[in-house]
Length: 114
Length: 112
Image 1 (spheres, rainbow over the protein chains, first blue to last red):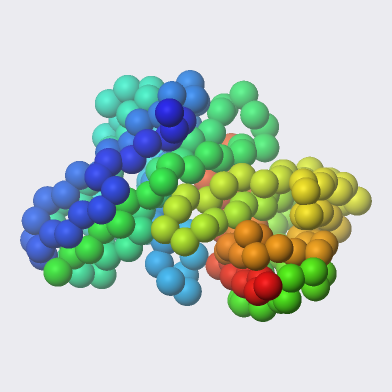
Image 2 (image 1 turned 135 degrees about the vertical axis):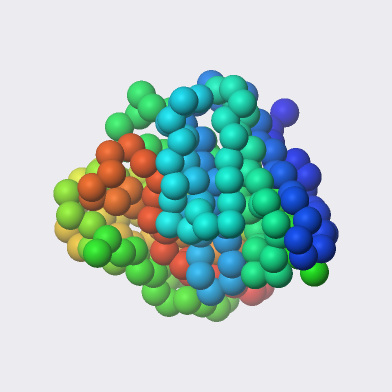
């Protein structure tokens, strides 16, 4: 089984709808991240969490919110989806005991907002 | 400003034609330089971490090297299955243990 899983893998929605993307991990890592990837812009950080009680905004957090339900679960919500949020979304994890912060990525969720 | 820049954006090679990908960074007090491979529609897959200038790491046909200003990913005698986008990344200088700053990647195509 994959260490980092994301659901759904693909989602098509309409402008204004609320969407939740979910991430689960079995690596036992404390740190979890949400990135989005757009052609020509690379990977950009949305939110990150060091533990259940520690959530931080990343580079592009506007229009998004997150919830860390447990050490192993980190959800990303789009409260009112808009077309420019169409992108590939990745969850990642890392181990706080590793000084150099090697990150492990899930398979991604392809989101299309019409 | 902390930045990670990769070049070229795209590289086409013939099978067996060796080459190098470049990653330059402007992160003070570098705490690791990471290389990832990403196949279309999939998540980045970790390849290497380099910690200090002069360090080298190898995996099959790939060798990563690090200087004080840049890193290179050398691909020796590539095969079509090496075709992918290669990403480099580094943690920002002023945020210990946080997320990574990624370059935009180099898309490698190897034809037989």
